[in-house]
Each structure stands twice: as structure tokens, then as C-alpha cells.
Length: 115
Image 1: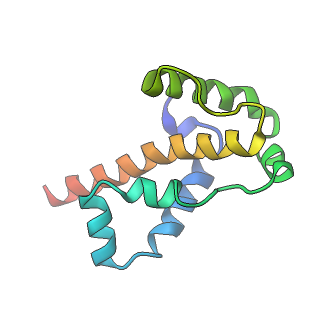
Image 2: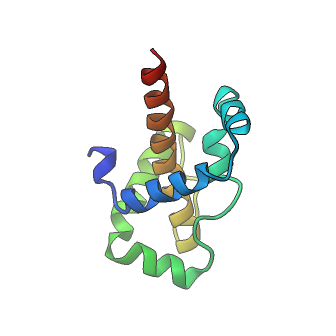
Image 3: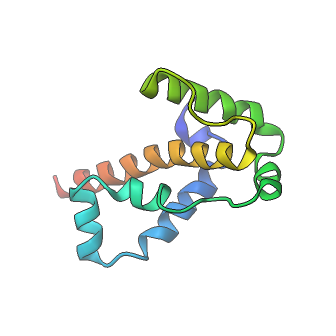
């Protein structure tokens, strides 16, 4: 599936774009150069806090989201590390995964503009 068709892709991309304005140009350039932009936006704070909010956010897409997490973690870690019984952890890991693609696409677009 194309990443742009992932559940709540546009919401996560809006979160990414909103987060970019928190950085001045020098800081943003350094985060990109040090390969830390994704970490800073998607791994230093939770996207969703609270079980109720997470369950509401997941809606009826919980199994689709879990499937994406399982595939990602098996590929990158060789095992499932996220507690899939915890809706908050599921949402935040999913947002981390989708955020990685959004960040990479953003950086690639900058590189293409400067080429």
C-alpha cells in the first residue's frame, strides 16, 4: 500500500508540518544533517496520550494499524516489541512508522530542490 493511503496519513503529515515551525532554520538544518529530524518530531513526545483517546483515534482500523506495526518491527527488529494490547503504544508506534516515511519524503524533496 502506498504510504499516502495509510490510515490518518494526512493528520500525521499535518502534525509533522506543524512541528517544523518549532525549529529555526539553523536548528532544522542541523537536525536534518545529523539525521535526527524524525527522532525529534516523532520520538521525543507522544502523539496521543491516554487509552481512551488512543482507542478513539484507532477507530475500526486497529487491526490494519497492528499489521503495519508487526511488519515494520519484524523487518527492523526481527520481533514484535510494541505492546499491542496497549492502544496508546499502538498509536504512537504507528505514528512513528508513518512519520519516518513522511520525514524521509520531506528530506528527499529538499534534496531534489537543491539539485
